[in-house]
Image 1 (cartoon, rainbow over the protein chains, first blue to last red):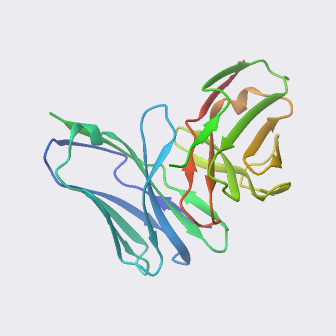
Image 2: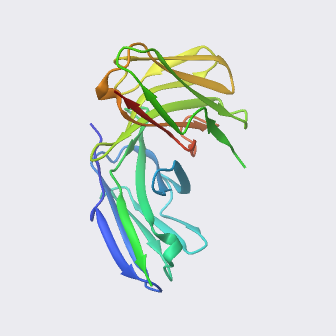
Length: 112
Length: 112
């Protein structure tokens, strides 16, 4: 059974810092990995999708990497801003399960 | 832009009531999903649908049913609401089954 872990559960950084969020998964037989952002009380917003054959995806200040063999992904946010404060979730699509399995998220706070 | 809407942001119901949650997407997506989100448990898949009138059980289908009579609309039904169904319910849609999922704003359901 696929398990997705995100550590730490919460992170606080000063504005302007580059930061890294971590995601690990137990079953490497994935189709893709997706990163989402969730603001309090709201739905999820898709940030990046990395196919299993890819190593990296970039969108603006966001860069996501995937190391399928070690079961790890990172989401890097450059030059963080207070508006980046949110919970970040990663999810993997596992072929055997035919569904997205979500981690419980990292709650990020960017302080002034 | 993909838009996924949910019928209510907040809902309060009594134990034993039949509850309908509706989700509508405007991008002609084939696939639609219902999740519930609880603190510490993350997002868990209740049901999904890959075509009109087609449905598949997710991880926690007990106490729920779904209906998809039209491509754009996917309804979640709580046959007899119970207090342990108090949760945030999130609907999502995607074009291909493993593609990026687009989420609605969520419905926070309280069952008293």
